[in-house]
Image (cartoon, rainbow, N blue to C red; front, side, top):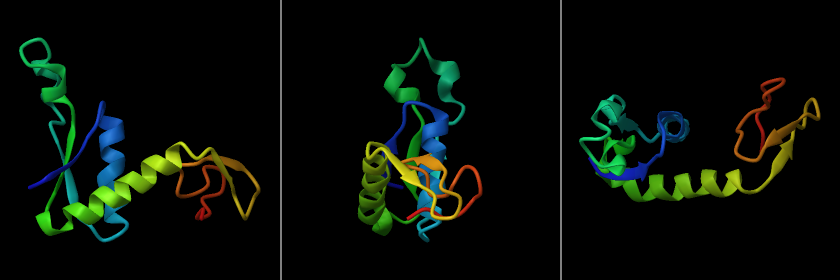
Length: 101
């Protein structure tokens, strides 16, 4: 199982397999309960990791994860249905649920 993403917290890590899953790529989060080792292990060893179910999907997964992180920095998106402003990394409107492009 290849690691494709190392997250600083569990919330950030869980977004990746959810987002990849919507694109038909299966991934899992590891180290979800490793924070108890902090102090005995280096902080980076307990960070949540996203690993692939199928290593053949790893390259595509890395590219898709780069897209979501670049969208993160891209500012905001306006919802085509309700006109509400959403963060650039949102895939659907927080207000009405409409898919964002």
